[in-house]
Amino acid sequence: MEQNIGDSHYYQIITGYITDLEVYDTRESYLNARKLAGRPDVNLLTIGHLDLVSMANSMKITSAKIEKIDYDTADIEQYFCCKLGDKVIEGAFCRTFFNEGDYVEAVVDPLAGGSYFAYALRRPADKLLWLHPYATEGTEAGNSKLNIPILPRLFLIGAGGLGVFTFFYFVVMAFSKNNFSLLLMAVMGLFFILPTYLFSSALKKSKSGSAIADKIFATLGYSNPKTFDIEKEYNVFVDKLFDLYKQYCENHNGYLATDEDTYNEFIDHYIHQQSEDDSQDDILLKQYLRQTKKIDGIQWAFFYVNTPAIPSYINVIHTENHDDSHGQ
View (cartoon, helix red, strand yellow):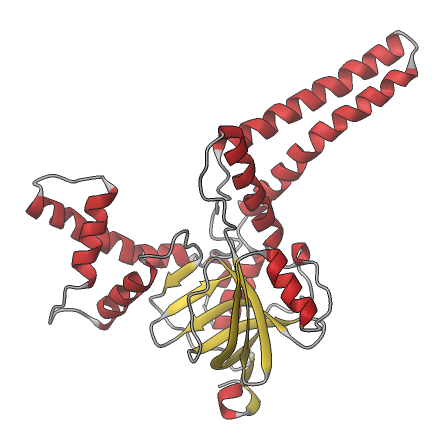
């Protein structure tokens, strides 16, 4: 499923300050930009989990058509290209809200043509980590979820059932009537089964953890990368926010409100509240919430708790020093 990924259990890391940052909202605009830059063609569906991303985007559009409603069908991912020193870094995250001049540590693998594809990007200044889509937990961490709307799921299940019925019905009819031209109709049934099979395969793959995540977390120095789930680490902050929200509701309403307006009101109150008791993590969490509050559809970007040391055996290229080296 991956392109340019060998048998190694690790990626490389390139550190430095972002320059020449360009962000693309669609796969087509990104590929056109690559072509204009003279970089070799690349099949994105063979890189990481971008095949799952493509399927999820298609499902959003299908769901909108089935429900005949007009809602946001923007792609769930954004592509980007930037430079760290003289190294060209490309990648796809859900939302790329890092900026020119940011110091970052990019977890990368080489692409044909001399550029690098980023599977993760860590910004130490405010402890933010962007991850490749669906690469949030290792292969032994439990089940991850591919969020597919219910109507497309039902549509695919129905299509699969119709395909199976059509196939066997016309096979039986062909042999019982000795009319083998009916086998052509049976073949048509296979076309109904194929989308369901592809969907089921992708869903199974999405629920088995991520080999991409294994390599990302191993490269960043997590002690048990295959069992690590960054969402569980981030839930420490989610639980804290929920406790503060309950307290806020009790003080203002006398009950736990579940409407979005009340929650947004609480977030506004929380991120602008300053306290002498705030830890460094509290300060950074408020900064993270201020940055992400107005960005719709954020996934796979986390405020992280622990910062493990990058192992000495990882190939690290320090562009800020204009000096390539191994280790830190």
